[in-house]
Image 1: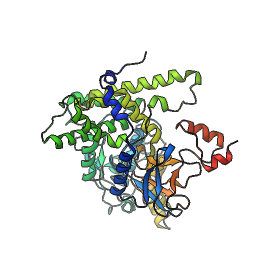
Image 2: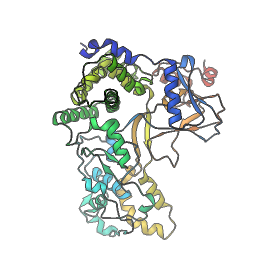
Image 3: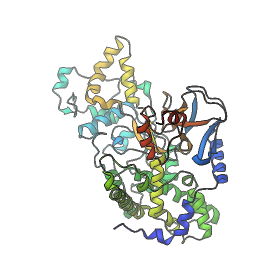
Amino acid sequence: MASVCPIDSKYPNEISALLSPPSPHQVQEYFDQLVWTRQCRGLRVKQNGAFGKGVFADAVFREGDLVLKDQMLVGSQHTSNKMDCLVCSFCFRFVGSIELQIGRKLYFQDLGVSTNHQCDMEPSSPISEDCMETESDDGQEIELENNESMGACSSSTSKGADLPKGLVESLMNGGLSLPHSNEFAMPPAIPCPGGCGEAFYCSKSCAEADWEVFHSLLCTGGKTEPSRREAMLKFIQHANDTNDIFLLAAKAISSTILKYKKLKLASSGQQTKYGTCPILNNADLSILLEAWKPISMGHKRRWWDCIALPDDVEPSNEVAFRMQIREMAFMSLQLLKEAIFDVGCEPLFSLEIYGHIIGMFELNNLDLVVASPVEDYFLYIDELSSPHKERAEEITRPLLDALGDSYSICCQGTAFFPLQSCMNHSCYPNAKAFKREEDRDGQATIIAVRPIHPGEEVTISYIDEDLPFGQRRALLADYGFECRCPKCLQEHP
């Protein structure tokens, strides 16, 4: 029997209002303002008939031109990836130093965990904040002992390469400086102001922005009320054990609550204590709808209705599978409700709302990818001229051997980008998501793959467009539409 969420029946009108699609005028006004604010020159979001919204060119884009850099509405680094990549929790730039990044990789590798082996991570990192804040002295290079000495050392990694005792710790705490690491300077890692030990930032402005928009409700640090902290830890553990898309949903709800409280305070002129907002009246609902507006603009379906059926699930078991997904979402929602519930925003904690938020991510999310400076560092060493290369490799080669393939792992996660999500699909697209050498944060980067003329719609491919027609059609069915681009019309049997 399916679990019943009492909030769904308590607030049917409010939930309906939240899930009602905005009017064409509201959509146009919102995206015109967003395009103007973000200075996305040469683009406009417009209604596109049966296809809903679309992004259109207002200028000429040549092949290879940057079409769009889009800041995410919400994004999250995959939990397991946090062991390999220390990045800003708000903009996802790499932080710390080459030494710290390599040291952390080796530290977790020595514990037997990596991106291929997710572990149960406590909210507090085993690496101290002092280590995170230390900047290595790039002017003081190190010399390692020769390979014979290394073979006798006791500190080893899961890759089977022996390293000198204490080397990993010295890399992390700034005691050692690698050759040429100053060529890959990163901003120092600034710890979360709430003291959770999980979130780090590239700047004070990113730390303040994340705290104001998301993290003040989601932090598991000592400043959080104990019962809420414990509830949030349980929610995070459940997300890590099941699907980290729940972490994105938590960010969407927390950002709406925080914006609601800010708008309500501005409208009333009085301080509203956390968790004491009155039951919704018409004025409160208007404020909640305004806070919800960024989420309202995304195309939504219930998660358990739109999620693709896995290959290992027989069609005869589809109903049971979708019910299982619904129950998983319900459990996640109950855990989140225990952690950040606000009476004034109670409709946000309905299963109907939660399912639609996750469904929006399922249908519209883009992979969050940021190239690793560690990979760039080892490539730089490899391309040095002789004898500088040989001298540097006496130090870096043992580290590279110990890291193995993990040296090149980039920051990986998932995110929702408001403008990119308006781009429609084509199997013959004129643009694609592509990170250039200079793109070193979590923003979505869209590049023209052929000339785009004023008035032409900017399209991307949601799938591998080089697949045969039948496979493309089957994959696109999960998105709920049948592609009728020129390529599909030509190849249709």
